Length: 199
Image (tube, rainbow, N blue to C red):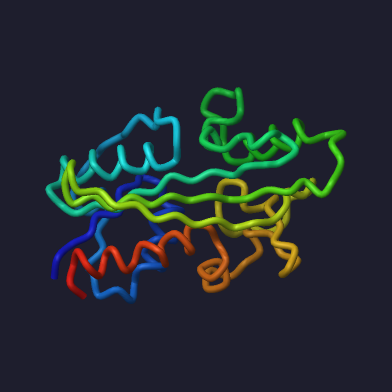
């Protein structure tokens, strides 16, 4: 069975992507599994540029087809911020997810609610530097002023899905895998993977 490298060092993403891809018949491996220690500078101007840069770097370093994603949360009341800079949003050095959420809520103070937002994910699959394909997914909701739930990571605890009246952090994994931006991007990426791996 051919192997697909999940090109991320983020354990939350690894868990989510493994779950989403488990029925593809493709063997999934992580950088940790093959002793690959690689950090890629996410300095692109779009989600796709960052995802492609990561997928290509991991494919080049490992010799394996690699799948990377870049994602972010965009808040209407913040003119689409933090977007591409979701991971680097807080001015604090070595900021935690909690620091980033707190900074976002601080910036939203006094702005009229609902604070409409979307999570966006772009997935890139690289078999080589010249052969890269992308797929995208979005999840729409709103930011709420209090944290709810203990699952997920990033901004999940303050991102509400109004139709479920639950935050991303309150969803069971199975539920999250139906509604999340990453889940939708993976669903759009699976036909690409099936073609590459002939499954």
